[in-house]
Length: 271
Image 1 (cartoon, rainbow, N blue to C red):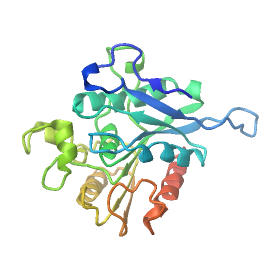
Image 2 (cartoon, one colour):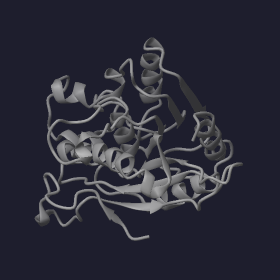
Image 3 (cartoon, rainbow, N blue to C red):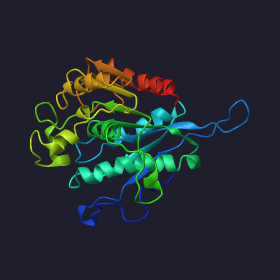
């Protein structure tokens, strides 16, 4: 299938001088299957946000992940979101629009509109976490798609940046996302997902490695504490092997278990 533009016209914040495309998604849709009554079964869907420090996106954290999900009957879209020199305004608009877009077009792709998840790696994991903490249930203005909820029904954070705090965050992602924003200021707080867990945040799965030198394991540890305080269902795996940016981690002992763990968790969520 061809890539899909999220806005047909007037992509917000778009600046052609930045040399990036208008926001698109690549679909990975599983073939139709029938239930016992001969009706087409709806599938769950995952929107994937590759990592890259908000300075680029890593291809190996996109298509291969979608194909892994397709193996167990889950459709996927790889989100080609905007990054530096764009800032948080464009990038957050992209993830919210992606969830709305998939939900609005769910029937077209044989997707259950209440089984739409986000999954991201590193900076993309930050974006996935923002989708699970800064969502709304539809806007009053904009087009028909904007009136649809952008709350994901589940979210997966893979070695994710979960704070903009310089003490234990990733300075590359922070600088690209919120620039020289004040340390301890409002932008830092708003875009630190662990500080914004809500009572209606969806179920979460996180995985990390204990020795990650780029995004310290304190990120998901702090997130886990806040999810627990809000009584949000979550699953959390810390692997001793591997550094950062592992993708499928096929050659990393122990950590290579993460794909089936995520597949099984999504299935238990009804995907």
